[in-house]
Length: 434
Ligand code: S3P
Image (cartoon, rainbow, N blue to C red; front, side, top):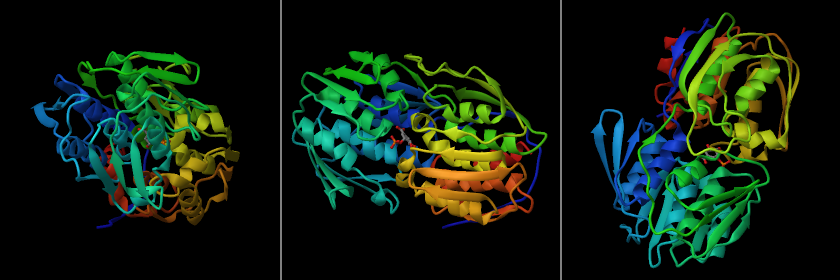
């Protein structure tokens, strides 16, 4: 059921704020926990619709998930090469693109196993040919509806390692091939055109998988088993980004974000916002850092005037889920803000280029779409307000809420319930800071 919620101009936002657990790292913790032989405690696993889909999928495959204590799940895995259950059956990925793209890497390396993956109406419009191609080259069979969409069927096989150049910078595709690489004979190398989030690589290293990085090339070798200790999931910088944007835009705000992940491959938005003039003080990880652990820390954010900026293609993967917020910041900034090289946005939970342009235009912004991004003209004054339709996309719903707080007349968000996909407590957390 779709809910409509009104966000009236309000503020300032003040106080301490702890974001929900990281969605990307939670998905990986559940999958790696399921692939491990020994039980893996996962502290602060995200409780959301998407990450519940991943727990359901690994349980269908034979893993057990126990609540060890409050805030700590125990993943009892089946082992990397163990016979998985539910062969011949259906795995429901719901709305979770990360689950849909990573899990097949594991399934592909199970000779004799057959699984069909399917999900909701939105996931059925998101391409899987990008993972089907490398998995086929490794020896598996993947048959998708119209050659590129769910439902699709994966038939596992004895895999062989490959060298694979990613046609689009995508952490999901990179992760899928690296996971399959752990099951494939020899070694598997993935090259990316520019760096995307590296949570899989950090987890592979911690799981003691033979791992090498040479610039933009990542190589893993076949392993018999994963040895993963406890995983502690940090706060999600992508979820925090909505509160950070609100704090930047609503005058007089000052918010301290606690326990947030500061991995440099995720914090592109914070660097872009700083460049626009936002005051964000914190221990952002240095770009280019190679590490095993996920850095966690604090960000101190204050409102202030912004200037337009240009976001180039190499920055896009580092802020991929936050680029619509760059449009919103741009609408409040003085001058022109341009995002280029972001055509991937058209393939997210919704077409986010069309959605943000239509949505912000409806609120009074001077914004136009380009094939690979958008151009926003701002004069430093606030948006008028109006209605935004989230179109089932959690991040568009949260963007609408932030726009409302910073607007002159308020914003009505149609489909606010979509936020539960990644951030069920969003509205509560936002209002608690007002
Ligand atoms: C994700 C990678 C990104 C991102 C998505 C989560 C991940 O997708 O947009 O929300 O967890 O690896 P792509 O790899 O398709 O860019």
